[in-house]
Image (cartoon, rainbow, N blue to C red; front, top):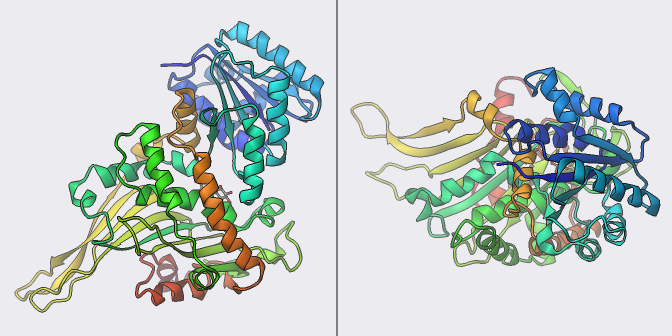
Length: 494
Ligand code: BG6
């Protein structure tokens, strides 16, 4: 099924547009979800021609097109309008172009706006979209915005009020690209389609949950943004808490957006607000120093481009959250994220409670791992009997990964999310209530850290973060299940 629609992308010359948006729109086009009745207006300050814009779009597609003709046909739907977000005349020009393309491509006045630029412009753009009647109440009108949704509860509320002048909550699609990832979606299947998990997914059987978002890259060329953000706001306020909410939610009455959201929001609203002493004890921040991985040396964060001298920004954040629901009260949800860690990997590990010893034999805890990326799949540790004439237990790993072929077909996160927007399905987007609850929690940690009440630990590039994050789990009588650093060390790579 294809939807008639006109996309307007603010920030069309940016990196995100080239890396993610154009290829994802193309994949939808190729799959038949965007047919002839669609057009894209790209705007940015630069004075590009339509021809140049088309060639930029084609270049961004890489090897995705089957042939040059297909790529050109797709790109012919793209139009460029040089735009200054503060200039009313530019919005009038945009409205004219919108009218013209709406007729040409018969888009039935359906409009999707994508704001892929610095959030300080969101309010201005939203205001003009209404005052210049680009948003005119005809057709469907949906707004997609990229994070960050503010930098604190206060700024997020301000941003939300600005957007609310033009768009209602059900027209706003706040992207969290992790929600579009195949294996994050798969958590619903694992939890609710398996009797062996569904019935034990609670505090009686689960000892702890571990969420790791490890990155091997440093800040690269994003120092200007990152140095004002840090790992807690960049990854935990959004991605980690979203994944946590899916892991911790109760089973929704149905899989429609209202029911799923209601359960997620319940988790967000039941996240324990920890006091200052608990925050000091339960949250760890770190910044990478220089280091070597596999013979290659990497600079310290402070020596990266566009980082303030003596910057106190954390490139690692870890800690423990608690969800005060009947299902999960007192179960630790450990999390860690960082730049320049040993390797790239997002995974969730569920450690079940210890079983009783059997026939005088000690059994290991069952552990379920959900591999979100770069490999996608599951593994489950169970206890088995060692081969031989005596009775000895040994852990066995049941493992399943997607085949390479399946991976090739798995939709890109943005493709899946665009598809949802076209269908008016906001299940996989962050609702304002979720954003609000997560900021009020994160603000507390930011405040304690800003007062320098917790140390900023240093960790070497290539490690899995500061020692304090290992000590934290030890204090809860457990340890990180995923230990890539040890694997590297054993092979002399670290
Ligand atoms: C983004 C962060 O939201 O997610 C980046 O701003 C981070 O700092 C990225 O690198 C990670 O996403 P992915 O999909 O590469 O794991």
